[in-house]
Image (cartoon, rainbow, N blue to C red; front, side):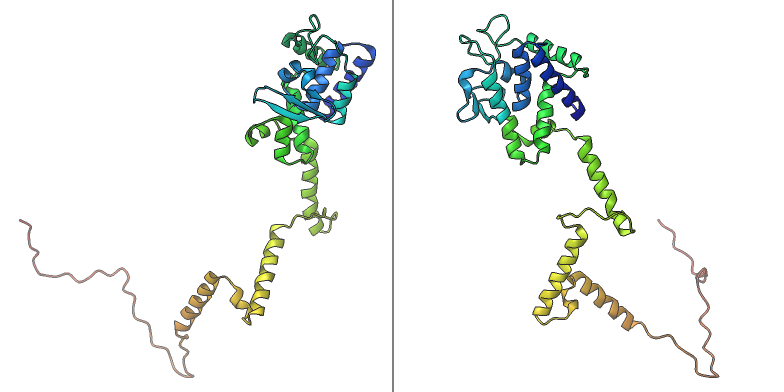
Length: 278
């Protein structure tokens, strides 16, 4: 996936190429639009002006890999459409460089993207990596999964999560937050406050609620214990009451000697002859 430093270098080159004319404007427009809409390459190549509604800031694809779909456009996407070069006779937003009446070919788009990566000093990644990066940005922005699926036009949560990649910075921040909690217990750095109750907090709250309900009903605190623990304590009390206390000798009296153990002794032999089987 395209990392944060790589994305910064990529957009720096896109701005430079647009100012200095290092790349064809339709290729630059196609790459930027694919990032904005988390779209597939085919959806950008075949995009037509008739599907673009600038007044309502929405695009309607009548047909795509998953069928017809509609996506809202951001302010940056609206700016790209408003400033995009346009052929009056071409219905396509990103037409072919050699024939405006046709959409941009896969060969032109793929090699233009490959050339951009090389000139920006980035490792090669397919054009679908743009969609993976955009889906990751959508998921990490905190929007609900259903909203993210609407922005990427995925039909299932499983497919949407396949496009989401974990970034290093959020994981590192989470590891630091987890490490600060035990440090606070041993007198180190203060723990990061969290509004999410821990398991210990929930357990203590349950005990307080159970005790308050028992007090309101006039019961002892033991009545709030689980039924299984009450049965266990009752059973243990009965066992202890059934055991006789140890015998203590009176002054000047000796205890009787215990019976000799019979462990290991064999039963006496019998002289009665055994019957043979027939």
